[in-house]
Image (tube, rainbow, N blue to C red; front, side):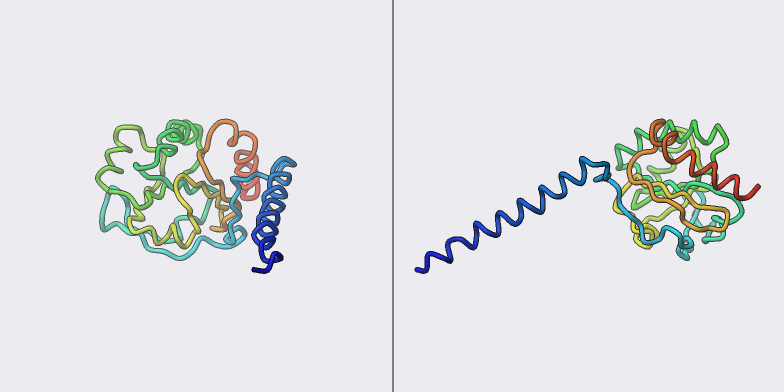
Length: 183
């Protein structure tokens, strides 16, 4: 057997070490490893027709995202992080932040019960039971929150829970800037 062939696995392993080390160094210099870019940033919310969560048969389309800046919060009852963020979303809504909820790949009855028990921060609650709008938005899971301007254009995608730290540091300034644009 050729002794040179024994070095191929070693070289492949060393190549992987270099790739992983490069990513670790990048992440230590400020890159956010949880940040997932969205190809839809700067584009309109995709076309859709979804039912209201609590009122089957009542349909909404992308026109609900026009007129004022708002958040689109993707959530589900099977998502423990959604539970953790829910109280803060209630606080934001009480402070006047406009939020549309999209219940994602969930059981409708459980989701309605969740909102009845924990409070409902949403102006409108969409039911995306089969996940098709989520797929069009590039949703990886819940929770995810999109900042959408008054023209229905997606300005930012936040993966993970909305909490006081990321709201005040990142999301609130962007939301307020969108509010200023329409004044």
